[in-house]
Image (tube, rainbow, N blue to C red; front, side, top):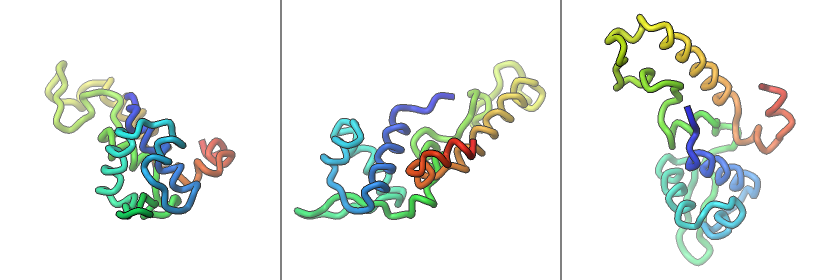
Length: 141
């Protein structure tokens, strides 16, 4: 499993919005997160559509967190952008096992399913608020 650059950027954008605790325009978000302006807008659109962020129109418009940073988990954002956390392709519901049509018969399915669940559990336990309080993030791991 690999977390995409888009998920990384979405987490950076949410962390920035949580840190400023106010409204920021897309250009300043882009500058503070080192995400290109075009990609920033694409990610903000997804975050607004998912109701993690609120957008404001007009001369003093911009973006603001719509949800408390305590309620935004790393898992939720990664899955929003990248889909379910799965170490192997066969763990995805739509996929079949190339070795055996019964996924549960494969020992590797069980091994990687367990590892995927552990990763998902850890990501679920970390919020944007935890990231802002960096020492506590590492203590919980």
